[in-house]
Image (cartoon, rainbow, N blue to C red; front, side, top):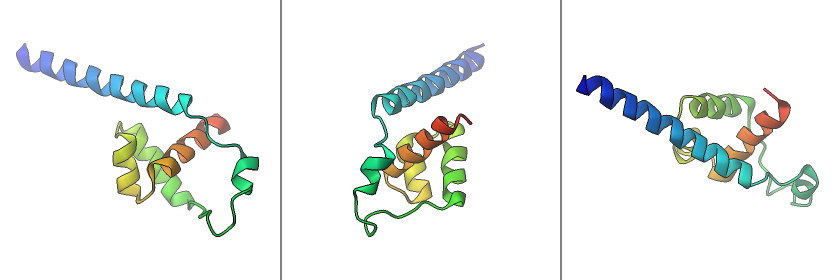
Length: 91
């Protein structure tokens, strides 16, 4: 019974962590496309579709934003941007 209890607590903590991260992401709006266009083209590096897929996959597995960013070799801001763009597409 103790092992089951510990597993349940682990799963609940994992879900709470995901919800907290989603809440933080929703509080930090992604800059609009217009704002992004004001930055010079040298500052913007497009994120390849494969990296976007990796970010979304890792995030859906329950990894934190920092972990996802580290594994995808992106900044935390880029990681948040990929996740938010996916949400805006409604997928």
